Image (cartoon, rainbow, N blue to C red):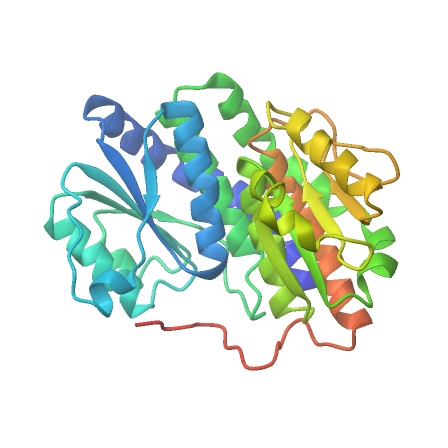
Length: 337
């Protein structure tokens, strides 16, 4: 896992160079014939990447993005109407039968189907009209790391062209260097806070919520901690009743319009003696503030924060006596139906 985490900056540079023409062509097509809505379809870490895509598309392009459960086709036999939509599916292996079946249904119904997939020869890639390879290379650890970061990099690249946003385009070009800088960020100060915990919240808003989802998944699968990913806005409702001295909150932030509301949440948690670990530009009261790079585009910030987080997750797993490369009961490829 740690070796593959270190390969992520190079993987991002590789895919950005290899996919630029394909992303430009697809973006031009989408601008010329805009989809009525966007459908995402993914599982596990890839579904966190789909959350990232949702926020980028809704914020920059104003299109509604909906996540469709693959089981509606594979288990229940339903065929969601997706004519006129952009269908985005994300997968490392591209071999999960339920994703393949929904992609087939989307294409047959007239959607523009796009697969972000690490295995460009997989069944999922074969079923989709457009394939954006992740170029992450082989991934041996059960926990997906460099392929997840590659998914986000590829989505950011497509959205920079689709939205014709020059600042996003600059963020894409500097992303490999930013990831390399994030790789060197030492988050070990969080180890004493998390080593003995059995539960915590992982929260964020906007694109940072995708980072929270991915971090919570890795804390569960690699570290054996019951981590619940939650929107910071939702945490301020009923779930807030659980937060206390024994249930810390790992709070992801990015420098955008959500930062003020995240500060409000952090201040309220700290006032209730909740241990808060701050990941990102936000720094609040007695919260443990983890190091992060300055001057990042708010859409690139969650990608870099996850890069830094992976080192903490690997160390935390070993501190808790677990092998992060071989979590119990899990296999590298999960073929859900």
